[in-house]
Length: 342
Image 1 (spheres, rainbow, N blue to C red):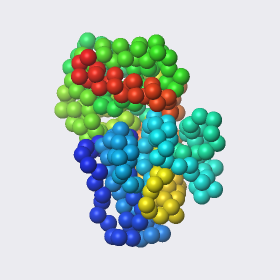
Image 2: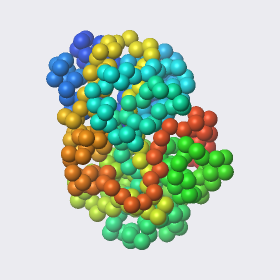
Image 3: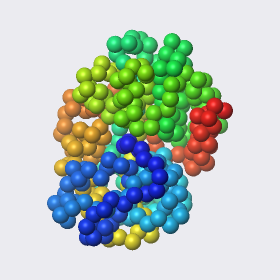
Image 4: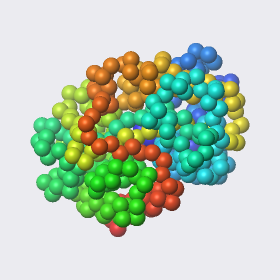
């Protein structure tokens, strides 16, 4: 998920009682009222929010009895949530903008079922962010820059298994991880082990990455597109290479409807509809997030999308779509071992 990462227990934002009639379980940052302004207009305030640090933490809390009504996850986690039985299908007749959503994003459903468990709301790109004054463009023309000893100790990857493996699969020639074989998984894992020795650190949130780049400690990073407008605003000579030879990645997140939520189902649909409403498009884009509402995004123009790192590109793209839950567990376990030096 693309927001500042937090750890520790889920924290419920203190709001008036009426707002607590529905709880959104989310990453910090997505409680911004500008992202759901039609909900605020209709109900006078935002819903209640509780926060998690990563989706594994969210899954464990929800599986252990924590009650939320709707949860924000990325596509890679959808299979696990659906197979666990803790979510229920959406009623698409109640999703006002469904027909306007990007069909490439709404195709992220599970198996052959016609039920829709995942409503995509926000997306972005992950690519090479680098110091354009210190790193020549030819050095980032390939993802193999992360294996280049020239930048040893001055590179960083996100502490995020999906983004790390998206990079590793691309670097080893795989552009569809949903069909990854054991051999492709092993090649990607071996590549990450090789890169591990070149890293200064694994960054945990965009603010940390911005500091690493601004201080000069890091010259090359695998980064979310929100880093681009942030560093441009700070007058930093940022480069954002989405068209490396092997390509870049697209991440996708959205909401699942919790089966045992104790709040109002009407408020759940009001909230998700607000996230998809054209009134939220600019606020999400300014924060570095594309909105899945294709019709609303088209109205922003290509210049605005390029400035946010979301413009059209001519290079392979690995979409971080749902994958087999067993493969994702292998990636989780292996990534933790790699970070520990094994």
